[in-house]
Amino acid sequence: MILRPLSPGGDIPAPLLAELTALYASQHEFHTLSGDFPDPGDIRPEQVAAALAGELAHPDAQVLLARAEGRLVAIAITLAHHPDPDDPDPWIGLLMVDAAERKKGYGRRIATLVEERFRADGRDAVRLAVLDGNTKGLAFWTALGYRVVAHRPDRALGRPCAVLRKALRATEGADRTDAVAP
Image 1 (cartoon, rainbow, N blue to C red):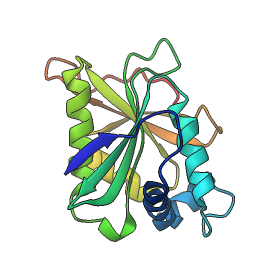
Image 2 (cartoon, rainbow, N blue to C red; image 1 turned 45 degrees about the horizontal axis):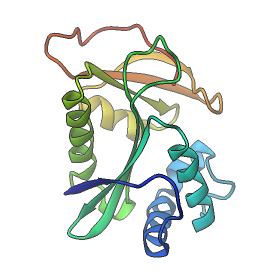
Image 3 (tube, rainbow, N blue to C red; image 1 turned 90 degrees about the vertical axis):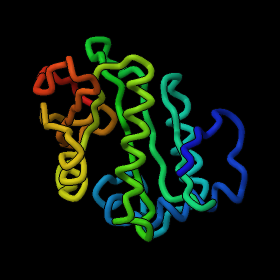
Image 4 (cartoon, one colour; image 1 turned 180 degrees about the horizontal axis):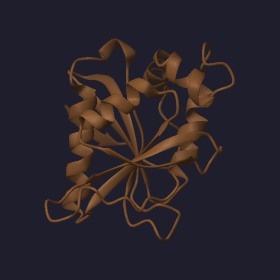
């Protein structure tokens, strides 16, 4: 698996945008829950481009594209520093695997690669938020060792979610519960 960052600034090349749009559209159930797109059954390239441009506008954000055998199989969006200065941890803002590629281990592998990146940067833990009602997402992250440390509305849209945290270093207390809203 190859994990490469999407370059900030500029237009996304049309073939890549088509791949990204197909990936986003494959996750109809998630987008129905999240409300990120006006019509989850009709996600358009310009909407995906705008969503990714919004993510990349944050200086600490990174959009990572995951390819296997040349195919785009997933996307991960990370945030090296949370906007809340009291939150010391980096965040995984999104990990989305193409619905046709689920249950092949890609999500687990990408999560591991993201954790390794943060660990290599000297980070002690990583956090993420799972929207209420996303039972599959919550089961996935808890199976990977993430623990719920809070329940709060997300910062962007006020949607209720669980905040999860995973220690990246053995010396760090894995049961730390001081969480900050996503």
